[in-house]
Image 1 (spheres, rainbow, N blue to C red):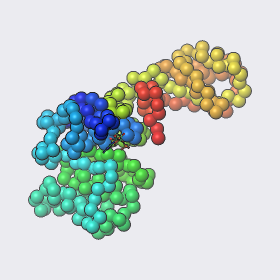
Image 2 (image 1 turned 90 degrees about the vertical axis):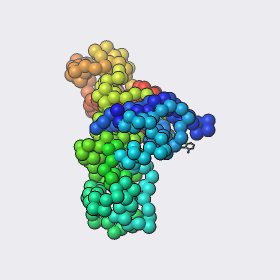
Image 3 (image 1 turned 120 degrees about the vertical axis):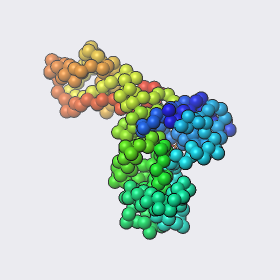
Image 4 (image 1 turned 180 degrees about the horizontal axis):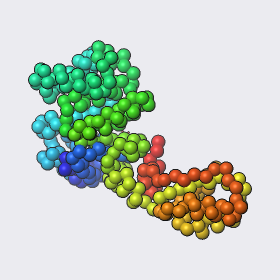
Length: 310
Ligand SMILES: Nc1ncnc2c1ncn2[C@@H]1O[C@H](COP(=O)(O)OP(=O)(O)OP(=O)(O)O)[C@@H](O)[C@H]1O
């Protein structure tokens, strides 16, 4: 296990930001820490990194207890913080070189690593720019380069795509996949569930400072009873139809939204064809009909009773 967090409690005065929080990170994986704003993701990361003192619990990294003085462990870690943290009075390459120099003494190696990081984040044309001249997306890329330039084994990225344009966002996500392929274990915090779905091998869902569920995308979706929703916009309908739909096999529940019927089904392969048969048998007409497989938002909704989306 690369990281093990056991029963960590962190209080900010009366507020419990981490409430007996547990988490494990396995070597070579991209672990997503997913949860709404304020659920405690950054507090969890800062506690793991020993940047914050917590009240209770234990954290080990690479099998050793993590403390503020664990320099051997810290050398193997890369951190890309949520807020862009670079020096405004240094250029792009000077910034990256500064962060590299914190870990790498050998001059030649340092130069090579800096060039590789510049290449990696696509900032070759901007090396002599000062940060204030960079767009938000490019600044984020610089922030990433500073965090990963020393080729760490374990990388923490705290919401690296917040407020970036689509192009930089894709660039960043592809870059994270590449870092992982090159051997780094990644911990990625986000409140964007689509990102967690496409990027992460395993996901921990956080709410109110607790780990409420963990597993692969598939495993999480298998934890809930809703497996498929079919949305139908009937042209002509009446109240009787609602009762009849409930008799279709596997139907769990029906919800009305803006004249659409949202029909929730249990798992099964014939839900759509059963519904189409029903529509034909009852001579119904519709202007809209589509099936939607469950998302991580459905998982969050079923586990907590609230939406994960902003
Ligand atoms: N220094 C602090 N003092 C007091 N309360 C804090 C402090 N830092 C965070 N909190 C509170 O602790 C809770 C967890 O915050 P945290 O920043 O860890 O959440 P988060 O999931 O990372 O949220 P976001 O996605 O908005 O960054 C929130 O209620 C927040 O307001």
